[in-house]
Length: 448
Image (tube, rainbow, N blue to C red; front, side):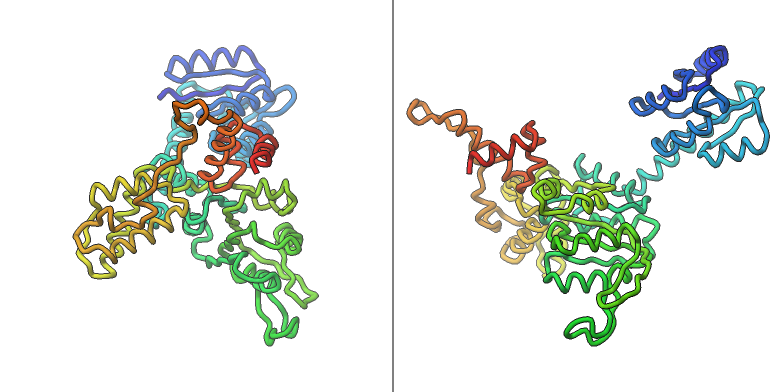
């Protein structure tokens, strides 16, 4: 594909010359005389590289370079200037430029440097792609669907950052697996991965687990204990089911995340911690914030990078790939010579909606392997709910007009069906239905 280059210089003649020469050598070139306009174009259009002069009216080329590096880190920048001194070169590199070229220069030299930058960019993108493909074949990341491939690529990109991550998805869809993959692919892979289920223990124990406590801070505190924020130092802390964190603890967690310091229960000293925080939930946190069940400031602190884990029903043929994965594993454990799925069983698995997602599928296959007396899993080996599953009709087919229902009732049934399909996630349901959240709330209230 032809590389798209954006040239920024307030010298119209230089812009025209560079456009002509670079286009002649096979580049697709756009020019801008104002850095501010160039920034706007970079925000709305895709370019493969940026070439900018240093001294321009208004914003300098170095400032433009710095802002582009911050907002579009994947776009390499080459700085050109008539003032080819060492200080300018150092300033360009510090601003994020990948290369520096002093005037006067030959166009061949400019093309050589552009080609080199574009090759580096291609290599960087290929590394990201390969890292996504090199994920361990952990259960929830097995698959070839477009949804799963997008998830794997996003996981690889998110992993290289150190910012907080919010992993959203239905129960059983693989949120912890995604969190572990982010940890494993990131710079903290050598550190510990520590997980806390916020829904699995009472409030006072969650506080102690997170922040630690001093000896005698409360009954049964017979010895001092460091909290998980400290135990995860150099690694990653997963706050699973973060939507269940008691409101009373949310301000303390927020302050710890903001200050990167933690005060154990019963202590007057704060201790710094160095852990990346990943939060996961199956709750609709946007709705929880609106309803006052989750602090908005904590939500924004956690929702820096968002990863949405697709439900199993959105992953198409991945259902059968996962089923075969579980089948082989269960057959090996049990020593049974079960090698595959019958066609009828495969059709039942594909047709089912999987409200319990991957976890439900694993349980289903484990049960089927245990019960089957054949070398294949048959339809009758599957749980009754899967064998008998049939999608409910949203519209009622009837020839007798007296059996037909008002449009409002049909709408209520469809809204209810969508809510069921997305596991109660109001944000996702509103998006599917093409409604704003307030309208969806009104319709749900009307159908109650």
